Amino acid sequence: MKKLLFLFAIAAFLGACEKDDPPAEFQADPSADAGNMLIVNSSNKQLVLYKEGVPIKKIPNSSSDYLVNISTQEGQAEEFSLYDWEDVKGDINNPLPDDVFKKWRVALSTSTVVSERVTWHVSASTEYSNMATIYFNYYAGTDYSVDVFLNGRTGAKLMTLSPGQQYRKIGLDYGNHTLAYRYWYSDQGNADGEEEIGWVESHTINGEENDIWLVLNESRSDVTMIVPHNDAQVGEQFLYGNLEVENRTGEPVVIHANSQLIENIIYFPDGNAKNLSTIDHAGKETYVIPIVPASEEVENQEGEEQAPQSVSINLMAKNLSGETVKEETLEITVGETVKWLLE
Image 1: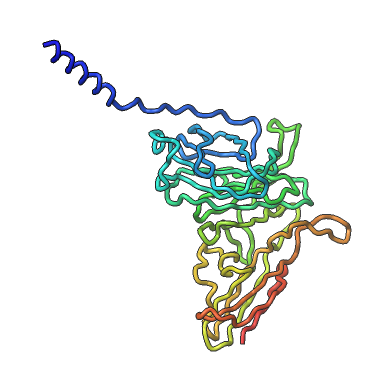
Image 2 (image 1 turned 30 degrees about the vertical axis):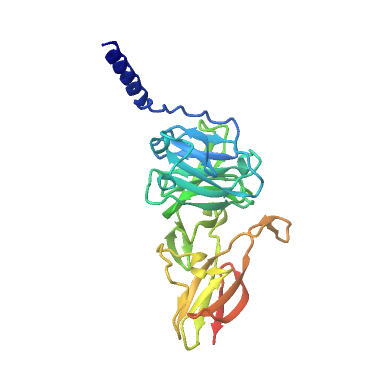
């Protein structure tokens, strides 16, 4: 009898040992006082931030600004990923790659200065996990600041830019977006501390008014945007030049610009540039080229800084067998059309 009771006791003990541990509880890490990455979590999820596969922060389910100060080497791109807490709470140190919610490869600054900080906007969308990097530039020559909004006035506010700020980095989901710009200046006499000047939600390309499109995908994952000055202050600004390519060869050609398909760098108002790089024989195509800013602003005759008015593009036409038909570097100037003849 005693032996039987002993065996029951052992069995009960082993059964207790086999019970699952209680699920881990989520305890968000506090936002840092200063940081080199700002996360805006609009996913409605509790998230875990990983750097190169190592968990570094638990991020609360809140769209309030969340600052992280991450150790890094200046100029070195690293992969950051976000996982839903529900998918990793069982083993936070070994997340499954297929469960990744968002991932962004980006170089951080070693500084925590606001102008050098990157901002990661995390949406609830599950269509894509990869993020694109957008570099926003707002040139000097105005007294107005500008707020950048995604998909209209009521969309997410991406950032505020002061005159002269350049290469502010934002991480956004792949997709077709539009931008809206709200201009304002500081006014301590106003209850809000600022006075709104106006909005810009479209621009004129080749005489036609279009939305300000921002199309992001695997081919356009690294994009530079120039935010214009308010048109009520400086009038219409041309930020684009045209390249007209005519193919007089006997076969189709594929146009490359700066070592990539030209469709990856052009402006296209309908949001679809697929296969625009290919021109049939006896065909002609006009490409609208954004004038991407140089690494430094230029000075006009009065010594004032202004946006560059042209950009050099290395063009290469190849046949469908990959053989080079013609290669040339052309200067594309704001508001003008440059013609490139292939024969």
